[in-house]
View 1: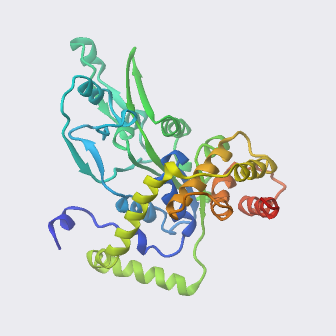
View 2 (view 1 turned 180 degrees about the vertical axis):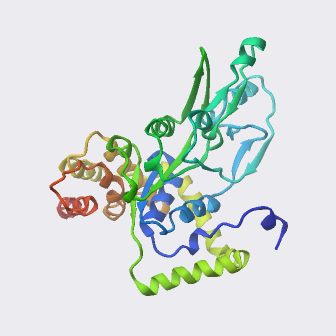
View 3 (view 1 turned 45 degrees about the vertical axis):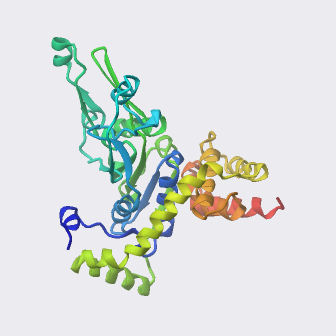
Length: 351
């Protein structure tokens, strides 16, 4: 065991996870393009939701940050930079930088608004005239992943703040007439068990994608999952080493997809088909159209292509729309099946 291994807690390799392809795809697409808007993962207990989310953070490429900056500021991108760093640049000061792992921040269920957003020291501001800010979890999650387990049990007010920050990419804290603003661009990942309650529809709609996880029924696959986990528990570093090459390949694939993403094209006829499906499903607003377009481009980039095709749309559209359908108490059909039915009918016609 080397020094770096002994310092950090071992994380189950993402490429070692068996099954749950829908959840893995949703997470991959969101890290390639965080503008998709995060992912909500609903499923049974013990289906590997938390394990998979922590695993995706571990496989991501390191990011360059301004040293000693609590907001993980980017050294050259103004949208990912705190006001302090901007001021330093305007003063033509040379910034020292370092490479760090992508932040993975957990939001506990009992967290307060101050813990999430950060706090301003009013006493110091009034007595010394200094804006003293104690960063919250949103600051720490900038340019990383913010994970909320049991998000359906989280206070609605906190969910609102989370979704607002995730959509705008900024967090503003105001106390007694003093205001502080900092970048808060992160991939929001929520997970929960549907038996413990659903999110309000207007909050659920704000998540870019929605993955549904079911307990694996195939005995052979269950045995494979148990053996993989047992191997990791007995000797985690040996298990990590055995997947080192696959992890490296995936990391390179993610980097290549992120670089290719701005060049991906989607034909106007395909855009019309996506909007046609959203209209037929009576999806409120245009979020469904926007997210499906982004997710399809992200998937095309992941596959190393320059243009989106019908198969890319088919692969992502259920993930993007199933949580946006209006609930009908008299309709027993699963929302995912309903989306798939309309997709099949619409895309059968020639493009």
